[in-house]
Length: 157
Image (tube, rainbow, N blue to C red; front, side):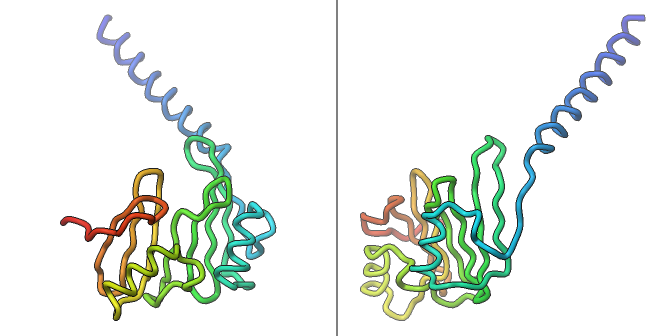
């Protein structure tokens, strides 16, 4: 009898957990289009001035699991960019493996790469609250502070 009760309780709890997960994701619907109109103005200005793009494969605005908004953009030239809820970029990558537009890169990071890796091109750049990451076309990965004010250091393997 006690075993039967534990079995029913286990099934009930698993069903309840599955229902909670479904409800959590039910409100997380992404908006996808090919127009940046729904993006924060900071992100729209960055795309227009720094990436100099006007046509897009897609613009997606969504929410993470904590309910914060984020957005990502893929341009016709295959430059992918991700923005936080304030419209600040947090990641950029050229999916063709070519150099990212120089105007879009932090000046300190660009100068460091030009000085220390003259033949290399920056194909990917990411930042979070703690670190910044630069990936070069030869696969070299450099880490720095999120604003790229300190000299980037090669990432340890």
